Length: 247
Image: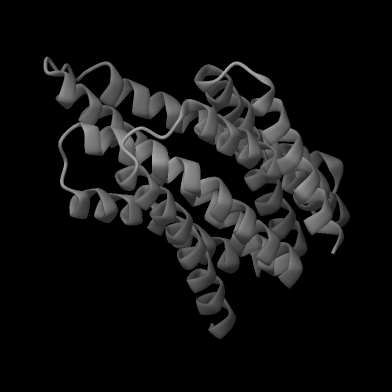
């Protein structure tokens, strides 16, 4: 029980810390440059890819069969697609705002809901990662924390420009990161059942991250800025992730 509590607290800390730092940056800088945001998103995507390719999947393959691992990957991708469809259907199409500020506020709310949904499988990765090894759990927690910084920025900027109070913005930013701790809690419990379950959790988290990287981070970074800085950020994140994995 003590180990589960420690893992949950680690997931909670790193999940809320990353989004909170991003939220503070978002409210302090009215309009962070598109170039900067593009680099951060690309860097986070490269870092996450290195975690998936050199930590999550190799560990999953060592613990279970290829078919079990691929099943976990597919489940992770499918769940993330369903989450995105749910957010789009419930909040993007059915609600209409006339005022420009309200439109920005709505964008911030949609992002916060999406982040809360996305943070759960990330927490699951941390929880199941600690079940496999301490080094894997820590590396995942740090990578996810860095990845959460641009997400906090993307949530805070439209909320601030939409007229929301700074105290409320920080509250919602922190709230969206709490699901990382919840995911870490369940990941720690489920991962303690058997090595096959740990492998499924790791593969599930890998699938979720693959979708986040290919479906959100990379496309969004390219939309924000068309230039070499995006590719440089992606490569830098990937290389730093590889170095971190080898330590």
